Structure formats: C-alpha cells, structure tokens
Image 1 (cartoon, one colour):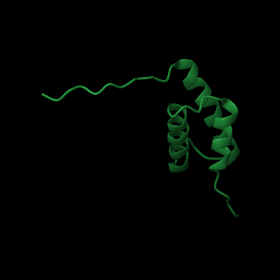
Image 2 (tube, one colour; image 1 turned 90 degrees about the vertical axis):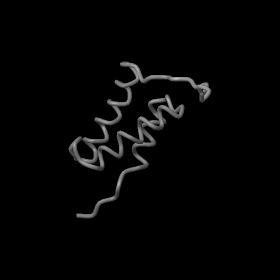
Image 3 (cartoon, helix red, strand yellow; image 1 turned 180 degrees about the vertical axis):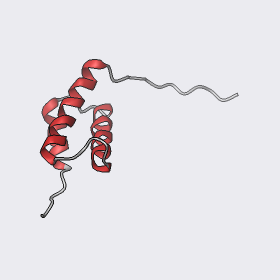
Image 4 (cartoon, one colour; image 1 turned 135 degrees about the vertical axis):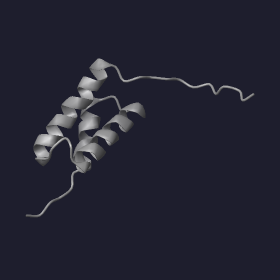
Length: 74
C-alpha cells in the first residue's frame, strides 16, 4: 500500500476567479485578441499558475500579464 501524500488543496473561489478574469479581460482588449486564441490560453494559464503560486495582488498579476505581451510589428 502506498502512503497518502500530505498536501494542501487551495481552490480558486469565485472572488479570486473574478480578480483573475478582470486582469485577463483587460489584456485581451489591450492585445486585441480573442479569448479562444493560443496567446489568450497561455495568458490565462500563466495568471492562474501565478495565483496558485502565491501571487494574490491585482497589481502584481497585472504586471505579470503586461510582461508577457508580444511586441507586434505591423
């Protein structure tokens, strides 16, 4: 029998999800991208991962989102 590992499960609740979504929505508008594109999916994953790793401040999450913008030429 394998011993169960001791871990903490800290789910993202509705208010936390709302915070992440607000930052995500702003970035979608700034980047003029659809939420269904690969770039948006990557951004969402990074925001959620950062939150799960302890980045809980809106300003810090926003800075993370801004730092991942691709510079486009057109």
